[in-house]
Length: 225
Image 1 (cartoon, one colour):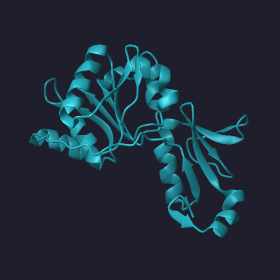
Image 2 (cartoon, helix red, strand yellow; image 1 turned 120 degrees about the vertical axis):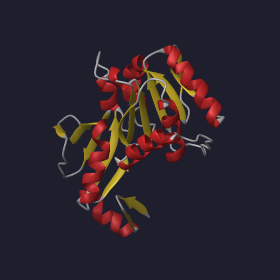
Image 3 (tube, helix red, strand yellow; image 1 turned 60 degrees about the vertical axis):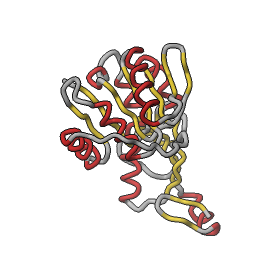
């Protein structure tokens, strides 16, 4: 048996679909759409004999194929398996409201709250709520260390570090913007959730490419401005 999109097909049925089957794969920060179809946000790549899109459009492509009831195979994400993230965090009302709004917005969006209002706690609660692999991207090594300490204390797990000479991936990983910019094409399909701390840095110095090259379907930005 094989899963194609939202259907499970028998071996014979799979053979009947082989010629027209749509296949999604990840390649260096992009999504390749192989098969006889053109989907939104893609352009034809003659070298690959497939349509190609930046990885940021992965969820949109999935939604389009599911909505159009088109059979496809999905080999984009190679997620780091996540353990059960147990959390004792109890959010304040305004923090819970912010998290609820983000969840209702298909788990994509920016949370804007003043400095010292507990944005990190909201992000940690989001990780435990989804219980999926996550990467937190921060602008400085100091912040990377702070996030590492809070994550480790809250979930009692080993935290991956990607920056300052460290290149270790774990179900929850913290990376600097600089390192993520360099390695996004390699690790952009390993996490379900990407969190951008001080997300106002994202549009500058080419950092926008980080967001474009990650296929993570769920995204959270944190900022005070």
